[in-house]
Amino acid sequence: MRNSLERSPTIIRTLSRTPFATVTLTILLLAVIVGLAALLVWQNYTATLRAAEVRAQSSAHVVAAHVEWIVEASDQALRRIDSALGDGPIRSSADAIVDISQAVGDLPPGFQYSVYDETGALRLSSIPEAVGINVADREYFKELRDGAEIVISPQLDERLSGRSVFVIARRISRNLTFHGAASIAIPTETMDRFWSSMALGPHSSVSVIRTDGALVARHPQLKQSINLSETPLFTTYLPSSPSGFYHNAISPADGLARIVGYWKVAGWPLVATTGVERGEALEFFWTGLRSELAFGIPAMLMLVSGSFWITRLLREDATRRNELEAALEQNKLLFREIHHRVKNNLQVVSSLMQLQPLSKEARSDMARRIAAMVAVHEQIYGGDQFDRVELAPYITRLVNEIASTYDKNVEVEVDIQPLSVARDQALPIGLIVNEVVSNVFKHAFADGRRGHLLVALTAQEDEGSLSVTDNGIGYEPEGKLTGMGSKLIEGFVAQVGGQFAFRRGDGTIFTMTFPLY
Image (cartoon, rainbow, N blue to C red; front, side, top):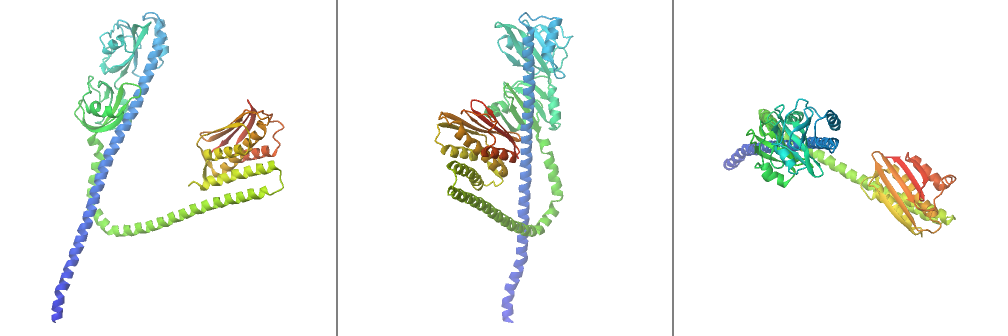
């Protein structure tokens, strides 16, 4: 009885610790789950912002590319106008209007061209009713008159229609004297089309800004241009990098905070920007988070019960994956061993062939052909790709080995474009190179002349092109295609599904084209 009383406190303490431990473990597990959930929420939040950053920057790149095209096309049109005007004073005439219209071609909808004389008076225009307009007071005209070759204006009001436009204007000069100006007015509503095509959100913005901070065009449109030279884009970010993004940019135009992507327009003093409003960028995140919270508690309970099962599955999956990786490594080892043994067997065959009662030339030819086969297998087991062969080191090695077996004063040049081909193509190509290059050394420089040999390989799309060019004595292909080497060349070319030809140049030129797969 006494022993029972002595043991009971221990039993009670053990029993009392059991639910505590269970609760503690449950709390710890829930804490881990909550921590993981918080981590996932944070990762989703940052991923959403990152996606908005990438979207803003890529959209700015798209706008910059379009703006570059618009400006380049407009500049070309202005150059053609300058060329069509001739050397005389700029004056209005029916012939001049026809010539200018033909020089400009079809402008995009809304684009207007104009030609002004040295006083700023309008002489020619794509709008017939545009008469009596003078732009001598426009800043872009003053800059051209003062010596600038081409000017892109900030946003301004077009005097005939009152629409917001920006102007690309080019100086017209004759004999270094200011002769007038040609301009193309582009509606700022062009930005509206860019914005609508990219679906950035109703509170997003698209802008083109000069590098001095003057606004050229924007969506949503503004009544007049503003100067943005003191904004972070010009004070901080653009001096550091020609493209990028930044956060919490409070727009001086409407006061909204946006994630701004920017991209310098290549070749022109312009910067394209796109701004994604932060609330719109995070809208899907908050919607998703509310949905996740609605199902969070049941999901936690399911995770508690399913975590053990998932752990077991992952352990089994890891075991199977390790087994597969081990099997893969074993297969790679076996492949290397197979190719290594094939190479060794070919070398044994080459050694045995040297003992045969054959002519020295026949033994050399056979040895070179076997060496080409050996090189393929060395190239395969020397790398990790067993179904592809890199041709550049393979062909370079073949050509150098062939050249080393001949005592000829020949300069060898190898120009091989990096190219990998299927394993079944590599050996025939190598044997073709072997036969053609060997024939060059045998026959092209038989008179002892100093020679040059060029082996080149290029690839375009799905076709490869091999050429072997020498400046030897040359030969007429007719009557020469009946030898063993020629028959082998013909057979190997057919094996790779290609076509070949010999022709005369300064010496002999062999060319072959073959499909790549």
